[in-house]
Image (cartoon, rainbow, N blue to C red; front, side, top):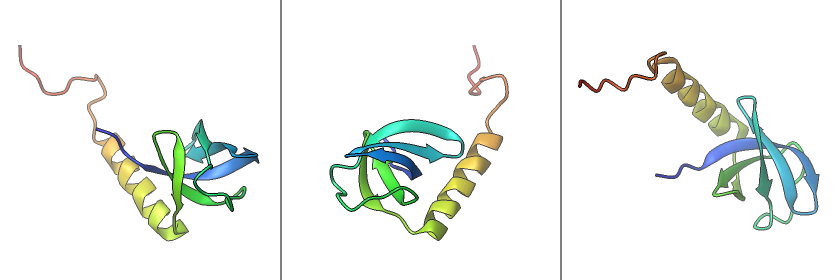
Length: 82
């Protein structure tokens, strides 16, 4: 399953961006958003920024991700019994 993640553009050269979400940084292409600029929050899917995202909506998504990660087992055990 693939997810689209809201991320803030922190650097941009041409259509090559570095984006940040929750302290994680990766490269993304802004080819589909020619007016994208540093500071914009975009939805990134499969390495491409596919649309601009409202900052409040992005914050809600980041909060949800934070809650999901906090509830994961620290050992990596997914509840499988052997």
